Image 1: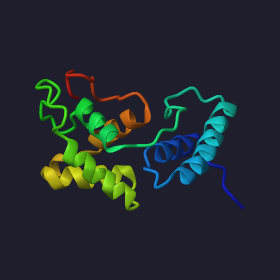
Image 2 (image 1 turned 90 degrees about the vertical axis):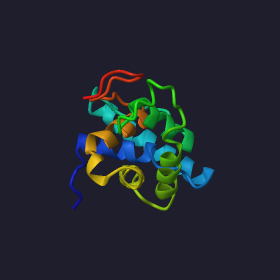
Image 3 (image 1 turned 90 degrees about the horizontal axis):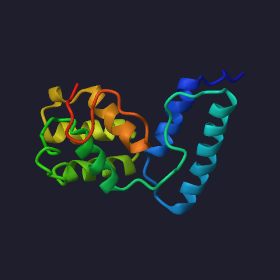
Amino acid sequence: MNKPISTCQLVHLLTRIQSTPYINWMSMWGRQKQFDELHAELDRRGYSGPRPSRQLKRLRVEDINLALFNTDPMHTCCVENDCKDEYMHIAAHAFKLAQQGFAMEAALYQALSSSFDEDMVRGEHIENVIALLVGMPVAAVELAGGTHA
């Protein structure tokens, strides 16, 4: 007997699908079908809360770097100093880990921890980057040089 999946779990699955790099185009088409079905289920349930973008795209290192730049999770002042490539090596590391099978949350945590003190990396840092990657609202950060929560 299968237990019904909660709305929160549906949103989480959509986020995972949206933030996982694709090895080839065939796997992308399979995920697109699953992605569309999960969005349709949320529609059937009348869910109107935040969810990943309905557009599934191929994740790139540049996307991860841009999300890191815009959220500046480690408060390096990269936005204020217009240092758009400051997080590029971290983005590349996270992308490589995700391709090896790590969930993007874990990949970002590992990549940030390898460049900064592990005690400095907090969950909300990762959540904000993931939210930007999948097109969801970022709760704790005002983007483009705003204040950090």
